[in-house]
Length: 319
Length: 308
Image (cartoon, rainbow over all chains, first blue to last red; front, side):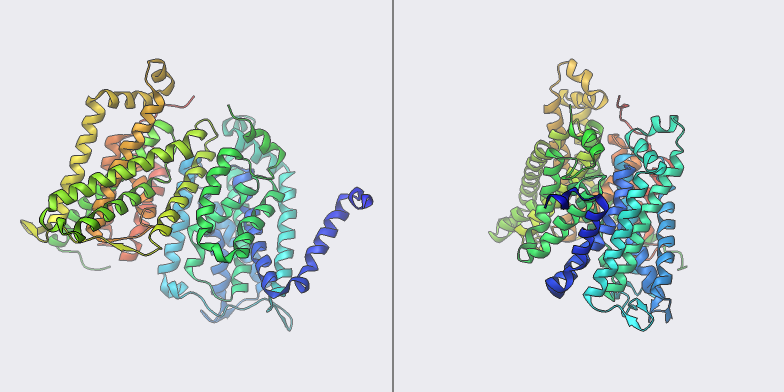
């Protein structure tokens, strides 16, 4: 047993991934489906973590980029316009569209701080949803886009929950990898500096504008990928799938799991998305508990359950 | 583009705009008062508005069912208003004590998220209370309208317009003429110095919440009576729009909140003459983005002191 724990880190990670990969046949279709759904939220959480946790920009309209990714794919790979661009081609396209959306959002809000930023991004997210709901000629409005193409490799089509499970697992691994690299990079350090004190950071020569836009764009791209996978998996999407609650859910899971830390995001997703699935019977009280949990967490443990060590220092001690 | 609307239609919409503008103004005042003192957006203010509306509903329901309301319209409405103000004020005080006071010295993110959490919590409390069913305000107000030249203003609209103006006038006098009002202004300007001057800052903060919540409650009852349908989510959109109004006029600025409310109301009412009706809400959000990008100080300018 001791030798297992003393193993080099990469071996432990490999074992963990192997364990996760082996789950689907053991847990059955329903739980595979649930885990895959959690996986999408992990990707969203990692992306929003870049914006909120790394760069410190409170984005309440994150769902907009999710929607861009999803509708981008849905409109170009379904009977809606009779265009059927392959899934794998659409991945970079959706990433690009979402990133562009992120950068565009970032531009007008560059000078805003804290509360204002939150409200404006919230407004932006709502505008996107309203537009999606009302632009009937393009998006089919509330009737949604149906019969979206599943991804396929040659003759093999992704149809069962297990197929999507592995697709999402791959997506999560890539996301975690990218996020870790960002955290340890020059960009990541610039973000941390910006988050802690924007003025001081810019005095130290950090181009705040560039890094803010990068944060929005990169964060958005994760949501774009999440969106395209969501659209493909669901087979049909509706504007109501992209409500403010999604943004708040993702924010919740970051905050409760631990801001700025990737294990925190994963824990948050497992807890906040997984547990309600387990407790379907009491889903009525889920949102009530959400709200209360947010308040309680902010008062007693604002850094979340598994914060990054830096965050614990930042938010732990208060006057 | 559609044809230019006739003057009567425009005038009608102006009246509508003034009506809804008054309501936005009342709610916006709550945001601006709290922001001026605590530098935080009371995200749950929309829910205080919603609770006020429901409180008024339950009171009016009792009065209507017992037949009292049929013969004593004015008294019933006053009772509903007072009851709503009481409920909302208590709620505001509890909110401040539980969700905001412990976070006074925390980084800005924490109270904002706490406010979001409180907002969600309150929405769901109401949802569970009324089993997610929308409620319908009892019909106690007399029908009818008065003609004013080419336009007709319904009694409802008169009530709302005059009522909101009356509340705002009352608030203005309160802030300008009373000792508590003066204390509120002092705390808004410089909390620490005010404390040094012997003002009980905590008590003033509670008073601010009480006042803001009471105004929101009045707005809630008015909205309930005007639109008749109320549901547990009704606070969300007006909350954001009222916040937009507060920012429009200049956050922290009491006169600004009133002005912002009317500007937003008119913009919406006149906007539906040119835009498809479903995009009405986009007007408010777009105005918010525009004002924050181009003139974040608002029309009348911010009245918040620099923090440190």
